[in-house]
Structure formats: structure tokens, C-alpha cells
Length: 380
Image 1 (cartoon, rainbow, N blue to C red):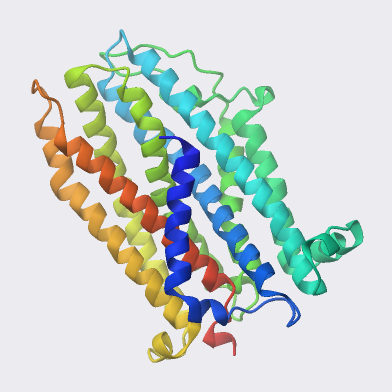
Image 2 (image 1 turned 90 degrees about the vertical axis):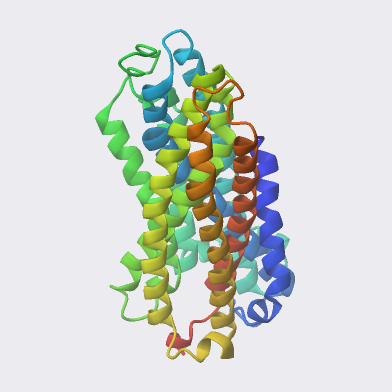
């Protein structure tokens, strides 16, 4: 699936949340009372795009390394394995390019928009070096500037020829004992892989530095909770996007039972990864609610609490779809291995279910952006 089309699906979910939570958005706090509603809305949009980009980068790398690579190793025959890996790598490259570009542009715009909010003027009034420098001196500006630099580092590590890291290097060097043999992977450099991991972890930490976890006391429990929450969601949501965008390119290179085996192996591995991510989301989500709310009544009495309820409702829908995929569709795909008809209806139903999950993920990200602009009751 085209990454641009997938982004539109996620933003459609975000738009739905914007309509469902006007009262929550109305309570959003900004740098000064002079900031205009249009600037607030634009800043919220940049947050959503940044969250999507972060999830795509982290979840995409995890999908290649933990799901697609081992699945290819276990299922791809020697004759077509390298071709399937190349097709997977090409789509991964396009996905990462979209993620890096969207994240960098949205981050740069966010810095200017925050300056505009502080200035109380228009976007063009804030587009001056002195004003932007003042914005970068704030906690928000410094953390978003750090994100922009970190995205540049991630781009070099993922795309730069100097590092020698190629997408095929994220896949196993040898595709299975019975399989495709050595791929034409770029050099495997452990230092580069570690550096990439550190850079991606920094992307996860940035929301904690610049958000509520970085300013509300006590900070020490909020920062690790925020890290687990963002990382878990990125692994799940970004992995889903990567599965939709990258996996079909590899399966198209395979025939019959080999294609079905790859689909079953990839979905099975991702289901396990998603289960761990859901556990992390549940624990960290409950912890965040306890830290930010003074009482259960504030769930309905405050805009922050109502935004949490909307996010929890969307998250429940995601869990229901994930459980349906794991309990019903995955067994149906596995049972089709060796059959003459292939996965057929089960595979089609799975693609539709995953697309619905992407729309719900867009809604969750929009609710998260709204929460980032609201003052938690614990801070008042």
C-alpha cells in the first residue's frame, strides 16, 4: 500500500477524534493567551504527524528485524528468497523516507508555530531568526530542536551510504537453512546498529522531555512511564503500518503455499510482538492516568479526563481487532498452508482489519496530541 494513502487513513482517524472531542480541545493550554485558535490547531496537527512519523520509524525497523526477517528465513525458498527480500527492502526504504520527511517537516513547522503562539502573531511573523532562536531557548523548542537533529542522525544511519547500512542488512544474512542463501546485504556493523537503536530511543524520550513528564513534579516516575507508553505504541502502530506497506511486496514474489507460509509466519510473529506492546500500553496507560488525575471523577469532569476516555475507547477497539486477528484470522491462514486455494478470504479479511486498525491508530494519535496540549489536573 502507498505510504501516502496510509497516512491519509491515519489522519482520517485523527479528524474523527477532533470532532468527538471538541470540549477537550477547547481547554488546550498554549504558550500565551494571545495565541490564535488556528495556530493551536496547526500545532496539534504537527504533533499528530510527528507521532505518526516516530511510530513508522521505530515500528518499521522493529518489523524488519523481528518479524519480516525471521519470517523470510523460515519460509522463503532459495530460488526466490533474495528477490522477495529485495522487494521488501524497496518498500521499507520508501516508508522510511516518508516517515523521515514528514517528521522533519512537521517538527520544523512546530518550532515556528510555537514561536507564533508565544509571539501572539501570525506564522509569518514568527518566521524570523531572532524569534525562532527565542523559541528554541524554551523547553518546548529545545526538545523539538533535539528531535529535528535526531531525525537527521536516524536518516544518516538508515539511508546514508557512509554507514554501510542497507535495509537488507536488517534481514538475516542467510534466509533459512533450506532457503534463500546469503542476501546481497550491505556490511553489518554492530556499532551502526547500536547507534541506530540509541537514536530511535531518543525519539521515544523526546515527548517525555518536552511534555508533562518533563515539567510536573515528581518527574522520575513520569519519564519512564512515558517512555514505555510511546515505545509500546510505536512498536504496535508502526509495525502495523510496516506490515501493510512492506509485506505484500515480498509475498507477491512467492507462489502458492510459500506465500501463505510467509503470511502466516509474519502475522504470527507480529501478533506476539503486538501482544507484548499491548501489555506495555495497558500498564503505562493506567500508570499515567493515576499520576495525572487526582480522582476518578476527573475523568468526566475535566477536558483532560474526557480525552483519556476517548483514547481508551479507541484503544479498546484496537485490542478487539487485534484479538480477532490472532484468534480467528491467523488460524484460518495457517490452516490454508498446503491448500490449493491459498489463504483467500482470511487474508482479505486480515488486510481489511489491519486497515481499520490504522484508522483507529490515527484517532489514538489525535487524542494523544490533544492530551499533550491540556493541563493535567495533577498540575493544577
